[in-house]
Length: 476
Ligand code: NAP
Image (cartoon, rainbow, N blue to C red):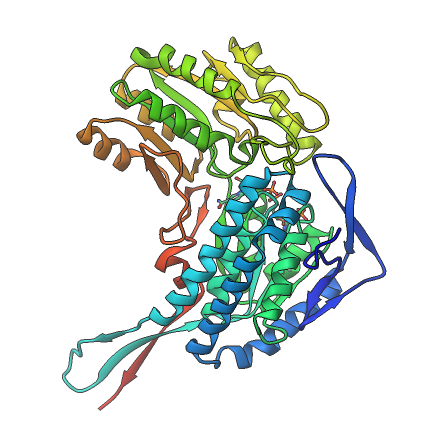
């Protein structure tokens, strides 16, 4: 590939490295291998951790102004290389090129945000109780951080962790998903060009995600682990991290409800539904999984949504007009097929779609009259399927929306102001979109409740995840 940021190496201590054993990365749109990468081992991982630990000593004492200026240079470089990054992202993840460009900009907004936010990591002066001592708090970086990221947002999930960690004076070992490591390696190259000192950011590539994950979660030199991915893996990492009482942030699976109340603006709700459902072919953690529509507007919403879905252009991400790309792999495709079949077996009607196209492509689908017992009503589908359920009353909708162990994003459409406050407050979710199908924003805290995770990314809270509060008592 003619792209200087496409590098088939891992990144350790400021150098791009090879290894005798490699693994292939495949383009999900074609099934073809696009490159080979070092299949590093747990033993190698210890070396990565040692390097991060050593470099932390100088990085933590580098001035905030210097750290911010390196991050600002990195921001500029990512801006300048937007297209190269987007091309790599589409090649390895399959997402439409238009979405990749948007993701690069979104990912970079975290670099910009945390470059600024680092300057505002304020402590406190606490009123003294005895009139003698002086009490203060300061905030300091937690130490070397391990970050593990998923394939569905190869750059944004990285910058949400790495940018605040670097801003806070922490060094990093990153393990990107083995399906989409090349975008992260391109980021490593740009971090080097931005002047990040050797060893402060390191990137390990491996097929042994279990072994590497365990080492990162249990190694004493790592002070914090930040993970985005499935709830199942998050649970394992949480158990492993308990052995060293590590700080932990988890951004896990979701099962977002999308409610349309009877006086909603239906055209706007349909636009929000398309935005909230079909980004990355439905493979986002905040993707709508369950549509609850009030009986009075059910048919109207169903017909308009079906018409909008019929307009979506499915195709390889690299084609400029593609709106829905392939699923990431065979097991992702099989899960989608299983959910549709199960819903149909339990009485759902297919309004549009419902079939695999070819390779890993699946038709954008609308299912109506879905049973509340269908798998799709309680499992995350991660595919381009809209499952429509009918409800009669507000309380019933809230109860259905909350009836899941997950609580990441939730959405609803209503023009009744009282109802907007009532429903927003009653939903068990970390983020609520009210009359919008999009919630992501670097300035706002992203994260979930219940089994969707711990901690927040972005916003002021996203920096605090990488800071410890130290209390100073000046006696006498
Ligand atoms: P996953 O299987 O949990 O993988 C995520 C990352 O963890 C990858 O880097 C993977 O490496 C690694 N991994 C896999 N098994 C591991 C183990 N035993 N120990 C340590 N690391 C391990 O998740 P996924 O299927 O790729 O991603 C989809 C899930 O992520 C969905 O549930 C989605 O909702 C969630 N997600 C959540 C957010 C959020 O912000 N809450 C954002 C995006 C995605 P390999 O790929 O190399 O195996």
